[in-house]
Image 1 (tube, rainbow, N blue to C red):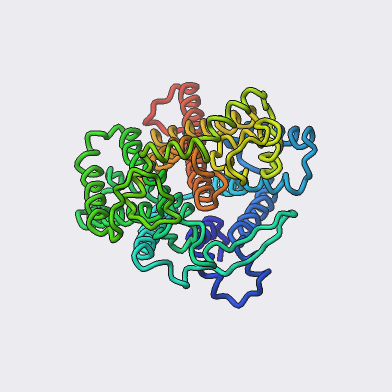
Image 2: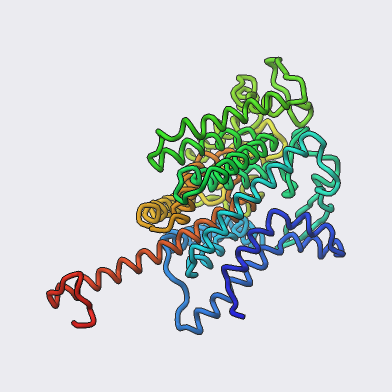
Length: 485
């Protein structure tokens, strides 16, 4: 039986949203259970090294990709920052790992020859699992998070950094009351994952792959289930960007005329359904309240996003304060290479040196919630500029694939990734997207699939150019065989 990298990647991608739930029922000690949380990541490292060995046997290392050079420059900037700021190697490597660990998945997939069978399965995976997670989260909103979905508390030490997993082990602390967490056990991570699933689902309505009425109706049901899941996660900005994703997809596809009879009607159904099923009385008070302390409906939770009280509180104590104070301080200090990849140490230096300890919150890690500012703190203005350039290179690559591929499944995946790329810029301003596993893993998964198709298209273009050159050399027409030459 031939070993297929793509099969194992598909299995790991299916497993990731459920691995914590499955781990709970395995007879593992606390330490083994803690490290078991990293099973998918460790498996990716193993696949990466196996791919290196396979390529070396065939006399090559890796196929070049569009992000190789800027990624190398980002690494150089990081090393300079580590040396100049005298950052310990262990914490620095852990910080770099948090941001870039899943990029290895990109390189694995970029070096594989993937077919439409694999592409179709990836799309099916997002659609089905997104629907399942949405339904579970909606159920959890009404009946609560069952003990079945609560992982075991554990403590893990990697690279000198101790991580505690205790949030859901004790009464849903740290999350909004009534929020659903799916099998992912984290409401925000669930929302980021469902947003990616939604981005893959929406292009199906454009009929790149022709489907009958029954399947189209099924897609509407799945759309509603995923949107409900995002609402029930109580992640306000994720709901906002989910609605925005619909518009962006149709805009990029130049199909805005088809948006109204499909997306708008479906969105209205969701809003009406939420208004009908909301069991918690609507809070009409104009005073801001913390949904972690006071139970509220998903609709009230979302509409608070537009309240002046929330904006004022944010400016005084949260992300608004960070944007208003930390960003100007970083720019004024000309922090070109940052304080190093060790996130905790870098944020502490920002507070002590640039903000003079004048923060209204004791937990300085809140600054990292505005992740672009967190990245500037760690990697400086140069590092962030390179990172944004990497996203730009990915965008150009994906647009090329979307315009030139003949595969309807790659049309869907490339259009989905264009939407994800566009959304990721503002989304990262409020959520740590690229360090959250459920966003970063699938971001680089789709990026790698697109990179594989990009390579094939470029190789095909080179072959066609060479054939055309031979035809011109021997004065052959397109209908004449090159063998005769």
